Amino acid sequence: MTDDARLAAAADRAEILQVAMTSLCCRDTGDWDGLKECFHPDARIVTSWFSGNAHEFIESSRNMMGGHHPDDSQKHMAGNPRVALNGDRAVCEYYLILHQRRTMDGYEFDFQTWSSVVDLFERRGGAWRSLGRTMIYEKDRMDPHRPGEVPESYFAAMDLSGFPKALRYHCYRNAKSSGSPPSKDIAIEGTPEARATRDAARRFLAGE
Image 1 (cartoon, rainbow, N blue to C red):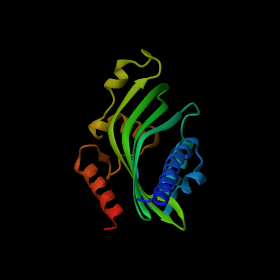
Image 2 (cartoon, rainbow, N blue to C red):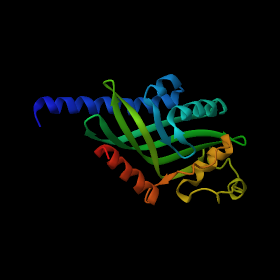
Image 3 (cartoon, helix red, strand yellow):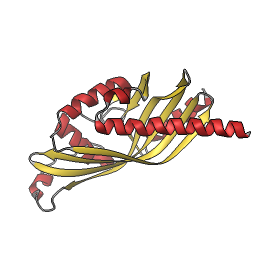
């Protein structure tokens, strides 16, 4: 690879990572117009509670966050990104930890969700934007914000039977606070859905 080619590839990777990280910040801060700029109009997204057009996901997220408790908060923290390039296509995968504070039934809870993000990128008109994003979930946890405040009976009464074991508290929170059931396309690490997601990403990158 020539020096010019290396510089061009480095610039492409930097732009792709900037778009990916900006999308997370926009999601956390409620910058919905900025978030739309990170996705092509025909982009698709699969999360724990949504599967479909990315711009429709953004509008649904706007409505969801509008119903949160004023003291609720969230931060998506990303790391270890890997970008593979092939012409005007790219795949960016990175680790993600979601930290959330949620108020439910008068109690404050802290949630953490660990996942990997598989982003499919395409350059159109000279600009890189995401054409597809699939979350591959690994594990989660739920803790009272104030230790000892929440009675054991609260946890004993939680019905987690309808949720994936690896993501039961995350899905319970979604169902409890916004009425959102798990997506039918939800991908959990180590499952056929997760393998299919990465296989599809490899085919996309190869232009198949």
